[in-house]
Length: 455
Ligand SMILES: *Cc1c(COP(=O)(O)O)cnc(C)c1O
Image 1 (tube, helix red, strand yellow):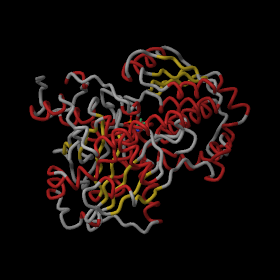
Image 2: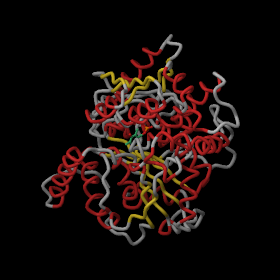
Image 3: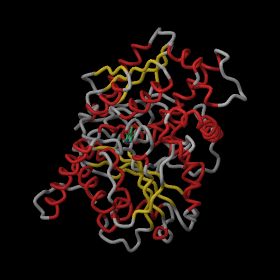
Image 4: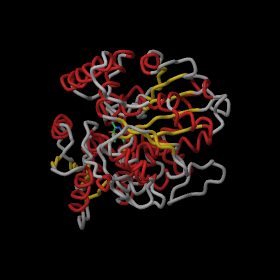
């Protein structure tokens, strides 16, 4: 067995053997007196929300398909009624379930639209201001004008990605007139690369994993005055873009007359790759809902990079290879061996726990979601669907509920499953996912397969 300094041996062994598990964060802290931390304050989230609002007309000028939403990039919050009965042993105290449908975010088709668009917009605005093409009182669509386009055409935006971040950054950068380069890791699906090339984005294919693609992109940008590299392993702006989701979720809950308080706790389950998206969302949610929200991340058993880092006694960058794990998963959006240096430290006191999921379960749950709710997602986005089951039907979940004094309120809880990607997946690809899930699901139903995703 591997010995990692500052990691519990039982946990080490379970992770090494790729056993699905729920880990509870012992450093979870009450919101009480949160200072600004690592150069970020809640005010920054509110400011980011206001900026996106101000720049919305630009997006609506660039992408006619979002005219109806006046350029606001947002996804619906939908009640889930049928899925719980398929997933849970009993729904008696399972509360009320919702899906936050980021798989349907316009243009990019994934949660990456939130962070990716934000960072590209901020960069574009900054360049235009520096060139004195854009000032405080100017209308946002000036950034789509000829002068701005000519300016952006002299600049490059680059990024390293497993697929979806590349789509998000590449599509918007190209639409604004930037030269765009996406360094894709080995997992990246062919259709995502094709889609970008059709829009004039330069796609560089790498044999290595996400970390290697990011390193290659970062290296290629060094010393290039006119190249801006979006660094998913360190980005504060991606994080802020994602965090705005919390403000929006609050108003969506208001529309459903859902209250979040001591008597009605909120549980949120978020697929996690490098940690920027679930981290930003959690950061925002913990500020908006305080101690009444409980955020859990979901990672594939082959790449629990965030779990590993958070479980270490002393925070330090750590790669799942140190556990002998190979970071190979069909969940391309989550195929990340090492957590974000920006997001991970901020999650140390804010996230409630992390659970892991096998690829078989991803496909099975993707299939079940389509069967019960007619909703199509990609494998990565299915990672969080077992969250309520872990919380409500496992011993360790019961421990969390008891320890946080939720025993009496948990049956009135709201559970939000964050579906993070999938609406752009081509039909033939989706049919293969669906078929795989169907085979696994019927094998389990007849007891042929012993695929033991606890609980
Ligand atoms: C990127 C991604 C995530 C996770 O976001 P990170 O910032 O990498 O943690 C989740 N789901 C999908 C579909 C993604 O593309």
